[in-house]
Picture 1: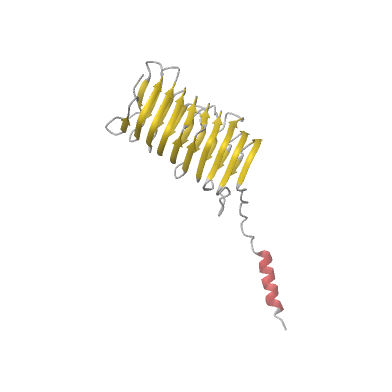
Picture 2: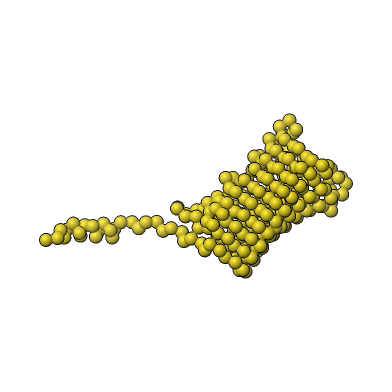
Length: 262
């Protein structure tokens, strides 16, 4: 005769056993030609065992967002966004960014991120923000009218043919940066700033401004190497502002032809 009590025990254990944690549903591999008004268009928060946007490509997205348009925190890699426009339409009390990369690998190609503004004593609002231990590639595109920085990255960063304009600071480097041509126009506070941890190598920096301003702000212990500059600015501008404690004795600066105070 079958062992009925034993079968009953197995059945009860199966019913009472806790369910396995649900995995976050994977995103589609490609998305294109969408116009949205939303809180966050991509919001990939950490989930155990999940990288929702791994090997994901988005093209021709126009998004008005009341928070970050793209936030990658779950380690997703090979995320590519092309030919898209991200704009901020939310309250000015939040810390916001067009693209916020906390953990993962993102490539932006011909993307515009604009108007990410926070009204505060220190106004956090970036076109693109990347944390340490991330990889950020930006090719083409424009990052404008953001209250903190156009590009603000602590990660491994590759930039080519990027325009940053009318931000608090146009470029804010905290990590390992390699750049081809960078265009910087009319910032509120400065064109290119190094912060602790920054090692920046730039092939060509093109500065355009209609008023005298600061071109480089340098923090102690950082490295800035610029092969050449094109500076179009009225006379009276400042080439370098040394942050407190920074000097040629503890900071590496090598500036090529054209990198001169106007």
